Length: 426
Image 1: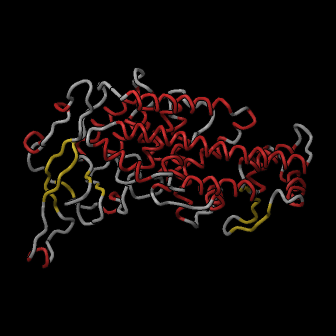
Image 2: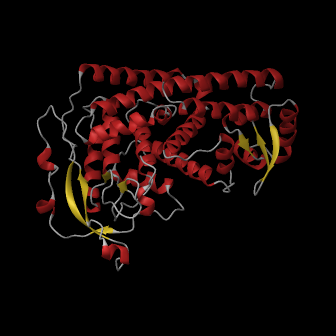
Image 3: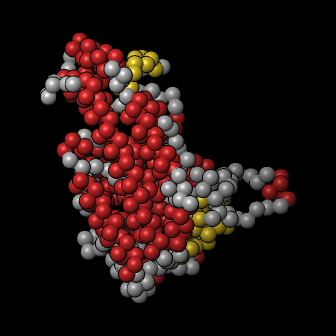
């Protein structure tokens, strides 16, 4: 949400001086308000202790402030939700369109669910300024770890897959598992709630003066229990519920890093768990990417007690994502039709299986295709060579992996999807 990623740099800690009741300006349980209102977050003043044992000479001469204000989010698990008629209608329409889009993809196209899932993971990562080409991402997926951004996006893809597998649970433990998969191999305590402050701002030194400081870490477990209880409710309009659960999660900021990506992974888990999407991952993050500033402004408005903007943004993002995904699906259909006309595979043949595989896995090795399709390596090479001769596949040598086979048409379609998503509205 800013150029500074707080979790990567926070090394100090808030002291325990003062009790919550003495130092909190707004108690979350007392801030429930009336049934028609949504409470703004409160705040509490905390002491800041530098990561350094002794202050520098400059700090002794001109000491910096030693306190900061941390958020105190309200508890929302039992809160009534009231939306304006316009926002409620917008949310309901977007929800119905998501269901319709998911149902519109026939059995042939559900084979491309992994491509839509990867597109969602890439778009979510791009919101955090992590971008890479489809070729780099898919090459990283089969073992080339030379490009850091691509490797991190692969981690996000795996977290999305984990989210779908855990969609029936919607518990704090399932969120921790998503984060564990996302941050595997990093030093950001994968799957563990944070035990230090996190903040959004430009300074890596301290949270003093930051635009937003997450709640003190002692509050995180109870807040996460509460928001996931809210997420499991079945008496709320679903897309609005998802938008609010996401905004509350981002306000809690329960991890030292990866909160944005985990929060958008939670969106996909809720869409699947509540039967809005059953077959594919609708790349909602690609819709949010279309206007990142509006998305961030909506999160800020939520923290001020206004839920309407984040619900509206989730609805508009869903509509944008569906439009973009439909274009991608149409391109893939056209590509496959052209391939079949050129290759003329027999129904059920090994060549037909390899064509379908190349469309949904557009970067692969002969060994991975052989293992995934159950075709012996000796038998698969004649088919690979034929598809290369027809211009359907390209054979290239990649560092650390060796010979790989690529479908540049599919990779181009994925890159065009990402380009459309990153265009800002005029």
